[in-house]
Length: 523
Image 1: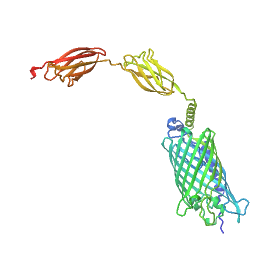
Image 2: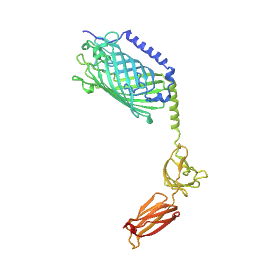
Image 3: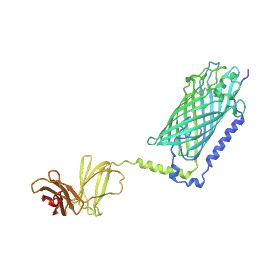
Image 4: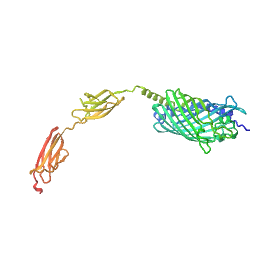
């Protein structure tokens, strides 16, 4: 019987080392040309989140496995990680320990050349040990090469969407990677940042074109341990996930659920699909260095494992990983300026919020002269405060509660002002209010009749000015006039007109009784 042993030779390990060295060189000596560094702070911060969630082991922002939709400063990120996975025995074997053990390591380089575009390259290496079977010990090693690109676009406030495409090359039966088993994920990521809470939530849905089973030619003869070690699948899947990240100080607390739901006519039941719950923590020493510790638990119902069973991934029941991340910004001067600005905002927000403030203003007349001795009434929280303007028209109220108040201004010879005002902790310059002169008016009243005592509908014109009114059916009229001298002309059809000279006093009333003679020439 042919025994297939998935393993990677020194060529695969050399690939991991080369990727690691390239990542170190790029991150430590990444581009930071003078033109990029001189970019203005406003331009650089457009569509960016400096304090976005940290990077996953793929070198791009995310929770644990689940990446997030984001935009940010241009940079390169290098990540190195390692861990241990344990899988419970899948069948009864003659061994003191039928469990499956896995040591794993990964190196990744993530690059964001533009605030809205990023990509990564990652190499995974693992060493698996299964319980001995009838053929003896069962150890194997394998590697996978992964790469991906992601584009981010801010849609509304803290909402960002990102299409994400990833491909990976699983290890084959021979040394190196199996090119005929290239598989791909096409996903849409969404995230929302609650800046006030330092909380980010995110999710994804996508489609996985899985060809990893092509890396194995004789899977019917695979040993049980090799089936677990390979982690390949014969079925396409729908990747789903939801996660959250909460930052407090240098700590970032992580939680997520992810799954790969098998699809197809012969796909295993939903419960056999890989599903995981993960929790973890990152500690950010600064904006560049971070450490990560994650524990992941598989909640997949284990499928039947046998020579003629389809290949599906059997992931470790418990997986613990540790990682170290380093970010190298392409615009370090811009990043420094942004950090300083954010720290200033945080310091300002940390100050106790005032509850009272000073409300001040200045009163002037229509020609710009100060209004002296005006009475100022301030109504706030059912309390009325009284003040007056000084020789320059200024007034001020101290220790006024923050919020909305009502202001009433009364001054002799001016129209009264009533308006709502906003009392703020950081008030602008004193409010300038212009008072309009009070227009003092009197009233002209009258009665128009003919000599027989019959009331007449007449037209009354007053000059100077464009004043005109009409007498009603009772011959009565009224007209408001400002103080001054006027000529009143009273006209009615078929009657001779009359003129009267009047002088209107302030707040005065003038009454005119006009008896009109018939105009015999108009008969």
